[in-house]
Length: 124
Ligand SMILES: [Zn+2]
Image (cartoon, rainbow, N blue to C red; front, side, top):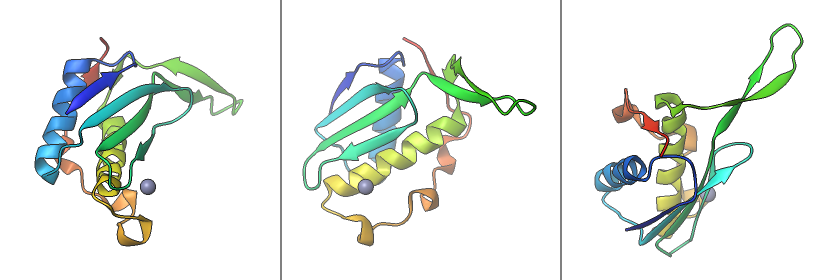
């Protein structure tokens, strides 16, 4: 499993994160590419190919309740909440690698990732 990391997030911790999930899922893609996102977390998995690409933001939008205005706040750490989403997206993309298409897959929100409790990923 080759990991190309173009983000601010720690490569060793990302590798451990993907390894742990792949071990649980019983499938390791050949290549994972992790790149920065300007907006939200999302992913892409080659159908039938061992390639997964994931977009991870370094900021999150914080909305002021009074003014309803949003501003970008730099993230210091990826906490369990954000990592749950990343894990769900990753598992979804592994499904594509294994040849599945959306009608054959469960909804991303229904993927159980309770095992991530307390996990964090820090900056490089
Ligand atoms: Zn998909």
